[in-house]
Length: 187
Ligand SMILES: Cc1cc2nc3c(=O)[nH]c(=O)nc-3n(C[C@H](O)[C@H](O)[C@H](O)COP(=O)(O)O)c2cc1C
Image (cartoon, rainbow, N blue to C red; front, side, top):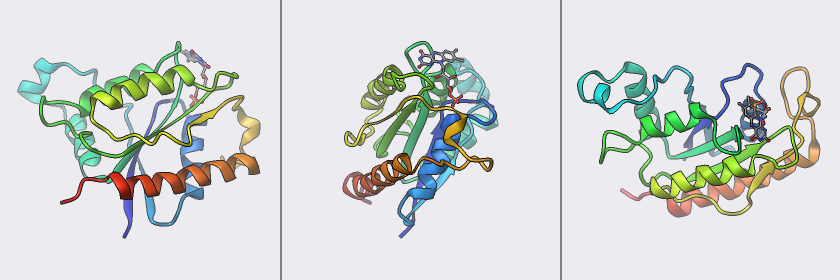
């Protein structure tokens, strides 16, 4: 059985490290996992007034993609010791209307990265705070904090060229697959 992983990248930047890491996770993961990178850059800032009258098509499409997935993987950089605004907005959009959260009950995992040594720790844990409120069972171990990430980590095709990190994220993805099997809502 194939499990679809809605993959939300916290960076909107072309050639983002986070997106290249997300693609590396997909490449190293067990074949049973299929990663669907869900774009968040076209989601208007969340406003409940608009949601009540004329929810933008991009919000509706985003919610559908999350709802139809088996689990959600977040791969994010840290902005000012927290999650980037675009990612927080995507979480807000997916969490509403009240009582109809697309995220509720979906197993989740968090990967953070940074060019610097702190490895997105602040973003990782602020995100985990939201995921607790969203009732998303979130993989605890292994934690994935990737520090010192820069272009030298990737080859000309954007593939991760560090063997040790590839092995680590492969182990992480295998644990995530087990976690989804253990925690996914049963029909
Ligand atoms: C607005 C902004 C705030 C940032 N704040 C932090 C920060 O708090 N901690 C950190 O380690 N890096 C910070 N950075 C650097 C990012 O970690 C770095 O740009 C990273 O490569 C972004 O990920 P990406 O390649 O996926 O876009 C910040 C970058 C921006 C644009």
